Image (cartoon, rainbow, N blue to C red; front, side, top):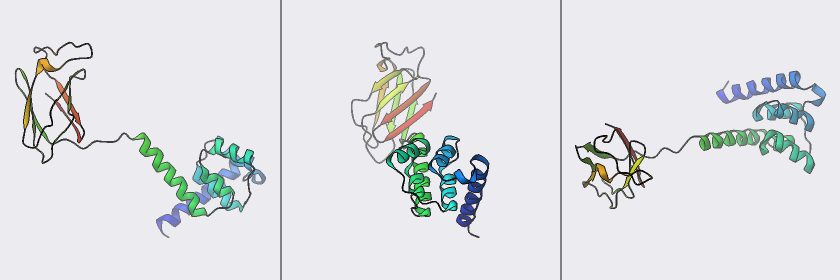
Length: 195
């Protein structure tokens, strides 16, 4: 048995259990039964499998569509209720789950290829990549920033004095404190380092 067939078999079995435990059999796949399952937290794929196992085909009214949408949150349950293709409904649920996960994960920027060193009076930033870096903003110790006014070309570097870093109130970074952590963000990516 393939992995997909096993998965669908397991979902089918779970749906029958969900119907038999949570909702009486005669209510299992009515609009009210489906809304109840969704309200109780039964996942869309299990609800869809229950609808398909029952053989229910129903053209919901506009009020029923609204109730199903509010309770279940996606169109795949409504499509399954209408008797649409089982695989298409499951694929729609899977696509919605992937989209929701991608929305929750912040986008990771590429790491900039830089050589960064700290001297007693400042920070040297050297571009070791083969591409220019533009709109670089350096953030020291989480609150002091400096915007590099030029593009950092491949093979070029720049020296930024510690006193060039300022916080929101315009207060300069104290040389005695120095740079403990550095975060650099530009159009091409990001870089971070602790000293």
